[in-house]
Image (cartoon, rainbow, N blue to C red; front, top):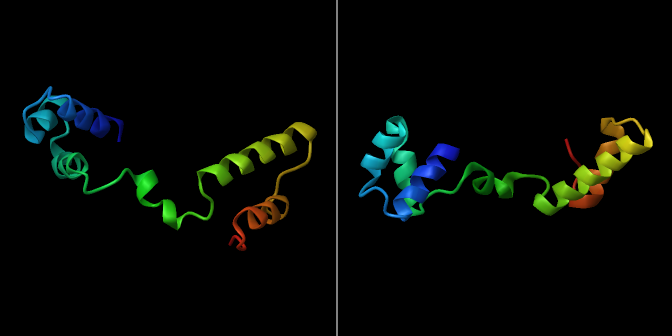
Length: 96
């Protein structure tokens, strides 16, 4: 993923004249179509592409992470029973 982003950045900065050359130089020949689609803006990175399928958005994940850190710092044991109600209150639906 990082190398693909590196190729796209190099193409946008005009370091390479075309996608094939960038893939050859960076050792991404097996990922030519992926680099090409990302460069043309037809695909998104995996994290952004599947955001609508996630139960929590980025802000809610950060809130949950901070709450879990607080639980750990206070010595409260973590389990599905302690975390599930918090997730339900954050997203409004019951986690499976």
